[in-house]
Amino acid sequence: MKLAYFDCFSGISGDMILGALMDAGCPLEHLRKELLGLNVPGWEIAAEKVWKNGMAATYARVTTQDQQKHRSLAAILEILGQSKLAPSVRERAAAIFRRLGEAEAKVHDVPLEKIRFHEVGAVDAIVDIVGTCVGFEALGIEKFACSPLNVGGGTIQTAHGMLPVPAPATAELLRGKPTYSTGVKRELVTPTGAAIVATVCSEFGPQPKMSVSAIGYGAGTADLPGQPNVLRILIGEAAEAEKGLGATEEVAVIEANIDDMNPQIYGYFLEKALASGALDVYTTPVQMKKNRPGTLLTVLCRPESVDALMKLIFAETTTFGARTYRAERRVLPREFVEVTTGFGPVRVKVSRVNGRILHVAPEYEDCRKLAAERDVPLQRVIDEARQRFEAKEIDDVKEVKERRASR
Image (cartoon, rainbow, N blue to C red):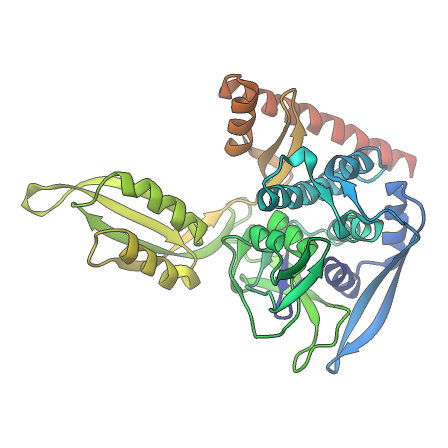
């Protein structure tokens, strides 16, 4: 399985990703040809070789005659829906914009349908995101991972006034992801860059085991003091134990036996732990010393998150100690596909191995929200999402065959 690893030591943005993909081998002419399928006039894309602190990189320059900077999420999804882009490109781009819209909606506390993008609504930003999805497809990338992100610091001038870095939408998109700052007083992670990695990446942390075959460097616009303002993308084959058995990765397991805590606290702790980087949290009834009924609290996380979650366990539970150990887990590749039901949009998690679909799971939170809003049974929303996905798969296969036949 081909894997792309985003090395964000100087942050990440849409144009940096696009430049890195071209630097790694995605042809500029292929991007231009595929982007024509957007059916949006008045833009041009070019690739420039630049040097940042002595490091050579590719800068993706998107120019546009577009005067409309503000677009609603619905307007952008309509552009994508009416486009002639490949189905996988169209779906992934729509998922990225929807993820960005959800973050904006939460920050401003408004319904998703009322969200209007400012800078991200401009054609150049649309080209950045769609072009990135075209590049992923062109390079055959199936899985994505990301390093901890250097977010920068200071403040930034936006349509909402002066805001701290990272911008509120960026911070929301990176909730639960590993971030840091080296003290550079500049925005290093943009909302577009954050939305892309938050949507496509299945893991965040150190570089996974992989055999690197291509490396791309994408340049940002600014020159930073003491560090090159570039994004590095490593592309290659992910190390898998055996074809079809999923990728192998190391996780940390934290356990604590508790027999004296108010049961109400477990739910609160679970929410905080997941927001702090836990992969999973669960409890198991156990019989403890002196024949006391107790609870085994188990937290799964990435090794680099152990210290933060240990602090949380000691702060929020009554335990005086916890044990940790490392474990190996197998993870099937997964992707998110958005389908439109009669109740609203639902993201569907799909696992494919060797081109065959193994599991399909509509996202619970999406279904729960729609069931509550429309006052219908939750199972009805889940069932319709599954049916729409199956119908969509059939339509996409037909469209791909027709595209190939027309070439």
